[in-house]
Image 1 (tube, rainbow, N blue to C red):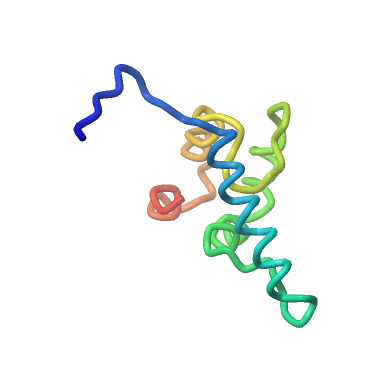
Image 2: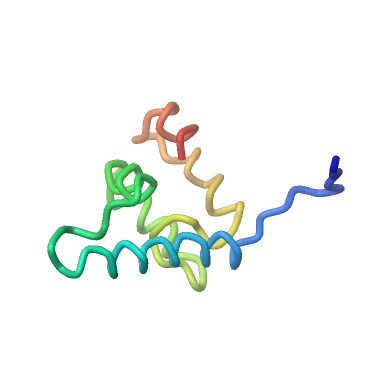
Length: 91
């Protein structure tokens, strides 16, 4: 079905639940035998450096990991001059 959204929609709890679930699943599967911190998005964010983690921790409830708490926090990534524009688009 075609769905029209009247405003931009960013459902943080749903997105957070999705990524938390996958992180927990990787932890269970690894059973300590390998580094379970291997989601692609986590690797991409960690390559951008501590600056992004701090940016996403400043808002209440922010963990420093993807996804950030709000769409505004996600878009704040574009204000960081030290990060290549193609990396910002990828995130």
